[in-house]
Structure formats: structure tokens, C-alpha cells
Image (cartoon, rainbow over all chains, first blue to last red; front, top):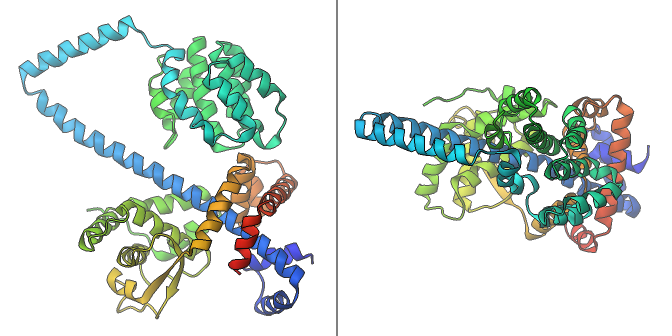
Length: 241
Length: 208
């Protein structure tokens, strides 16, 4: 058995007692094996950190979910109390009319509302992987066609899905809704990573909104809202189809 | 106050089930347990603990418990909530930021198992050293340089305890060979990134 497999077995704790003891003796005397072991152990620690990160991000999501629930629970009784007063009712009705009038004047549209969430979509530029950074920078400067030209040339299988998501965003920004949908739909149907799936769902929903495709848009909106802790649930709520 | 009852055996089974959704659901029950949350907040006040928020303590306690369970070292003598509280109490009392290891000082028996304070006295927490913190920070930075596909695949490979079949199923890949090829490629990439870093090599020799 190769050293790699033996070390893997030891680190995963699947050796029997005798095997383990022999291995440890060998480790103490064989410098080559010891060096390989050290690196492989670091690889295991790295994979353990990935699992920890996963649990940490879950906990962060549960925390914000709880905070949201607490806010809702506190808001409802306050609204019930305010309804007791006629004056307050009139004031509330007037406010609603004002708000409706305001929204009638500046009816939301896909491109306009999207601006509010584009920061959440891409995060900090410094956090972007190196391969995507030039294109991300151009997107930040609203040079979508230039960003697309760069993205078309990237050929890195590790970042393929992230590249496609960014291409989808550029096409959406250029109002090439059919092209954006053609890029994003396959990601949503057959995703590789969960982060990109959520981003692609959000972008595709706004693409459908921009294109006026209400059937596909409504179905996708429902799907996003039914997904627990979807990072773009609030953005989906704003879609008017 | 609603206290969700979960036997230690059910909890452990969920954490090591190989099903990430089931594992997360078990931890969610624990993380949102009001009794656990309120007790930690009380202790933080009692010990006048201001180094971290009660939620940070809870999260670190859960991470330590997770590792203990995955290493097969949580024996379930006490309820999961009680054990978690015992870990959290020691985190607060000893001002520990990051747990490297949970050490059992004596056997947890029926007389002590029900009280977090008593369980807390039967365990001690080893804090991560500066070198270990530095190693983790280098590893985290290295992982950022890897693609999402590789990160997800390696996480599953590690969690599924090498089962390529389960990795392939979880990633909805057509066959096990795809999983094997991807993991091999990603391990190779991780290794080359690690070996590129001379600081890490020095640190690892210190941490032997």
C-alpha cells in the first residue's frame, strides 16, 4: 500500500490497533514517511476547517433568522395597539396613500432594484478570487461589455461556474435578457456550488423580471422564498411580476 | 420554555450520519435551544465576562462538541445540552478563545451527569497555541485560493470519511470515478499550494 493511502487510513482512524502501532513505529524511524505525514496531516486540518466554516456559516444564518423573527414578533403587537386610535388610523391611511403615490411615480424595475443588492451579490472586491478580480473591477465600474470580453477568455475549471454567474450578471446589466437567461438557467438546473446557485437564482429572477417573463419569474420567486435562509429572499420579495 | 429533547445517541447519529442536512438540523436544535442560550448569557453576567459575546461562546462550544463527536470521543454519559453547557462554562471561566482539545479529567457518572457545573469540573479545555492559530490562518488563506468546486468536494470527502460513493451522490455526479478524479485533482492542488508556503512548513515542524 502506498504511503498516501496508509497515512489517510491512519488519519481517518480506520487502522486496527496492530496496524496503528506498526505505523507509529515506522513514523518514528522513517524520515520520508514522517515528512509526508506532516503535510497530509495539514491537508486534513484544512479539510476540517472547511467543515467548521460550513457549520459557522450555518450558525450565522440561524442567528439572523432568529433576529428577524424577534423583530417581526415585536412589530405586530405595536401595530395592533396603533389601530385603536382613529387619528392614528387616518394618519396611517394617509401615509399609505402617500407611499402608494410615491411608488406609482417611481415604479420599481429590475435594473433599479438590482442596484440595491449588487453589493451583496459580489461582496468585497478584495475577497474575489484573483482570476475574477479584473472582471469584477470592470463590473464595479459598470463596464459590462469589457468585463464580458475578459470573462470569455478565462479557462479555469475551478472557477468555471463563478465565471458563468458573472457573465450572466453582465448580460443582465446590458439588458441582454435572453443571453443572461441562457447562461444562468443551466446553472440553476445543474449547480456545482451552493453559493453560485443562490446567486444565479437571484440573477435569473431579475432577468425574468427585466424580460417581463412572469410565468418563469413567479415560479422562481416562489422557489427562492421557499428556500430556508436564502441570502436573496429579501431581493426576491421586491420582484413585481 | 420549550426544551427540545434529543438523546445523545440520536444527536451523535445525526452528526456523523453522512447527511449534511441532518447534521445541520441537529446542530440547529442545539444552537436555538433557549435554555442553553439563556444559561450561557447568565454565566457571562455572573463571571463578568466581556471578552466575547455569549453567542461567540455558544458557537465555539458547538465547534468543540462537533469535533469531539466526529473523533468518537463524546460518550453520551450526559445530555448533549448539558455537555455543551459544561464546555461553554469552562470557556467563560478560563477565558479560552479557541479550543484545541477537550480533556476528560474523570469519568462522568450518573451522580454528576445532569448538572452542567459538575460536568464542567470533570473536563478541561486545552486552548489552541499561537502556532496552531497561525497554522489555521495560513490554511484558511490557502483554502481561499481554491475553487468553490474543490472546497465543496474536499469538505464532503472529509465529512463522508473517504466514501467516494457518498461524495458522488451528494454532488449528484453520475459515477464514483468522477468523485475520485475530482478529489485527487483537488488534493493535488491543495498540497501544491501548501508546499508553496515556506512559513507553513516551518510551523508544521514546530507543531510535530
